[in-house]
Length: 301
Image (tube, rainbow, N blue to C red):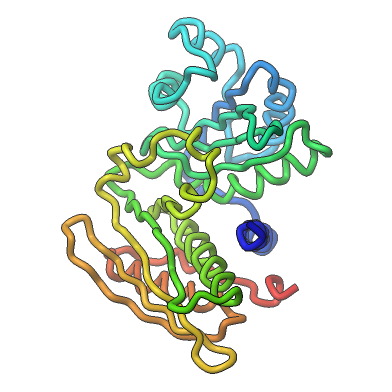
């Protein structure tokens, strides 16, 4: 459990550093703003209002009015509790590109707020946050959602025909040591993070679904048609000498064909290794890179 906690911290740190270096997920000039509907449990309405006010400051977003959302809920006789698979239908009725769904759940005898960002066009959950309820500081709760979701906004405009779904299983080390266990977790998270920055790449983090029981509440990703035809990615990572790593990944196409890609680099420069590996993956997919640059100095700090 300790390794999982450290890895989740590492993942959040990556998002924070990327956001600080590159700003939010700005929509390209000329494109219409993203339409977002915030949907919340009745007990979370106050937090939904706070989030609405904060996100309304972003020029790339249009927040749908609660009265319009409530009207559709009443007409369709649905609630947050029984929303489930109806969320995409609801999004289309609202004319929204994305939904932010806030729901309170019980986990390990404690209350938490699960916040999900759902893409209406593709019908998938792009991201989720999991935070104690009530949050100690509302500004930190807001920051957590903004850090996680704003970078994903451009994906809400992607149509299903242009998207590439990739299911990441795990990047495993051949030897079971605490150092390698941590390294494989951090590299898998770093690679998922780097891939998700590409607008048309959608990542299903299957290894996290195996670890966290509460993710079952996020919907049946396994049965979502979007993911059944996805690429599968797994592989291995090993130490080379004292300070380097060698990574070999297998990318399995929906047709069953497998591609083998290899990359090496310094173990304290995971950002550089994952960046080069991502560009190789994109080349095989026939996609061009967004030319994302990582601020190595900021991440070191």
